[in-house]
Length: 252
Ligand code: IPE
Ligand code: IPE
Ligand code: MG
Image 1 (cartoon, protein in one colour):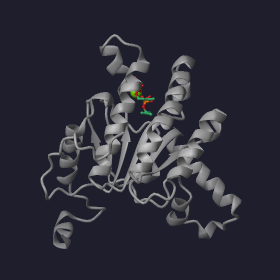
Image 2: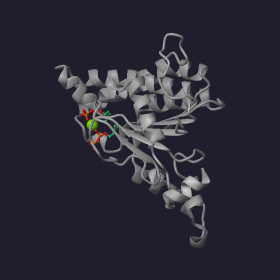
Image 3: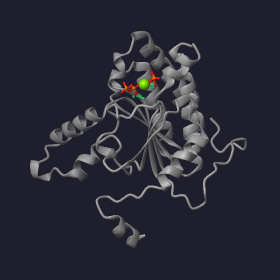
């Protein structure tokens, strides 16, 4: 990975554009991308990894503070065994190949999801990358793997019960502190590529007020220019958080 590489083109954004601080992406459409080319699905997943690298570069370059990528859902175990195995191998390989560049670019990387289901090899690779990058102060890159939004809420509740918290002490802040993305601001912008208009059990709690952006572009085709479009669309939104448009304009 070459974050800030001299060869990468400048993103064409107006100087006044307000960028999201936290971007969360459902990277969907790898299989269809491969199918269109009469290739096996894994070829699409490999192309998807390249696109993920571009996403990290673009977000880091634009000083976005957090990027969360959905790589494998808790429901993706239902895919054919062969595809799951190949995805796991690709995950291990990608962690090995990307770790150095991620670290050199001061990016802190964490895996969110139930890692206990992964092979020992993958678990130890995850632990290595996390400890290598844990003191980095740049962008936080969270990879959601064996992640489900419902699971996230349940594991938070389990932690609260284990801590012996009293019912009356449970509030939004307390629950949030035990969710996987605790410590990060909620995503400002959610992107789903691949044409489906659904959440597929990605972040549930955290996207209550996140701006949603759906595009038909398949994930392997999602380039810097597509990011520019998404950011421009985001910049044109008025986030009201329950208030009136007039109130928001007065405050601006
Ligand atoms: C997303 O692409 C990657 C994973 C879910 C691992 P898909 O594999 O879902 O691609 P499509 O939706 O079949 O095109
Ligand atoms: C969501 O995509 C999961 C990831 C991108 C990792 P899916 O392709 O699994 O979602 P559905 O099954 O079409 O809802
Ligand atoms: Mg899909």
